[in-house]
Length: 576
Image 1 (cartoon, rainbow, N blue to C red):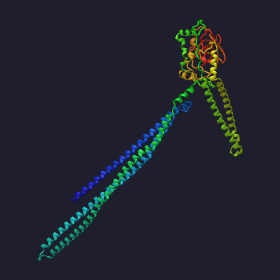
Image 2 (image 1 turned 90 degrees about the vertical axis):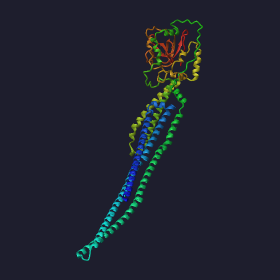
Image 3 (image 1 turned 60 degrees about the horizontal axis):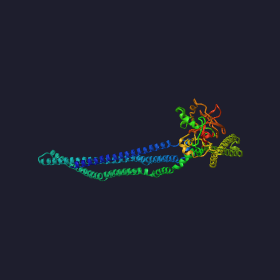
């Protein structure tokens, strides 16, 4: 019974150790799983931050002239601010990744090693204690069996002696007496051995009971308590890490909020009216609007020959085949010859030309100031070398000073050239009083000199800064005042109108207000102030057909000439 009860206790203890071993191993695996989870989260944050940075970098404005143009608009500046804030936002996700790695992953990895070592030590102590009590039990059993054997041997010896002693009588020989004495001595020796075994058994039993009591009430409970403490510490460490996991995000929220506030503030800073005004300022041509349309009295009989009236010319134009009028669509033909234009920006409208020239002057002034600063610095360096020859040779600075002096002279020459062009543009730009005075003069010319096709001019698109014409600018640019319009650089197909056409009669004269180079086919070059004959009015396309002599004729921009029609010809002076 005792053996069975002890076996059950040992089996139960062993089962408990097995259960605890499985549970603690599962706890370690859970810590490893959580560490892997945090590591993957950290990698996600790193990759997300990298993608956000690449996105911000991808849409950053390129380093070119277009960047300066875009920086004028509030919505472009707001988008740039958003990109910068987004870059800072990505930085906070990198901070999250770094904190997760340093505060959780690294700490858990180190703790896992400690946890495995501690668990291994506790279970080693438990197995050792279990083996010790089992060994003590085996020794106790051995003492018990020896005591039992000695007792049985002593009992048999006693019985043998008693039997020998009862069979002896007086008539027996001395030999028999000696055998009886020997049996008694043997019985006494066996009794002594049994007594010794009993003493050993009793002593070891007492020792085993003490060890067993220590095993079940002290050693094993202590080991179980250490395992319990280890498990609680593991769970507590997991809780701390989970809290840190949330705190890492919470710590960057204020900065993330500032990034988002910056994006919101930049969006609130967008000013549509300011941006639209920037467009107006950038593309206004400075052309003077047309004068008032005068009343034409059709109640009077108008006897004009077909060769003398522009009305007949208009009818003839309407009766021409469709193929002959395709050149009239030139404002909508895409310009394929765009370029940087001449150095003086004469290809631009007056207002745009003035801005370009002013910008060039400012740029030259900056370059001159930069060169002068370098010259001053080198001059001071030369003075130091003169006073302290050991620091350097003063003559070594002279070549650079000479080079800088030449650069300043070149820049000043360029500056004077552009200032002259700017003064010329500003001199030609009219004031409001000039416009009103010019209108008064037109009204006193006996109704013979009027704006050429004013009605059509209201619908004619004005020049864009690059020399082409666009309809979108018409509503803005027709209210701006200037005296230097720009011809289109697109190629009008005027050559079709010269095919199979008889020589047209003159219907008036015109004076060139500005020089026109006339590079395109079908046009004619004129100089400022040149007098020409008008052979065809502007039919709404912005071009007037003129003749210099019998062999030279072609089209010129209507806004470049002042037209004087003959008294019997219908027309108007073009001055936009």
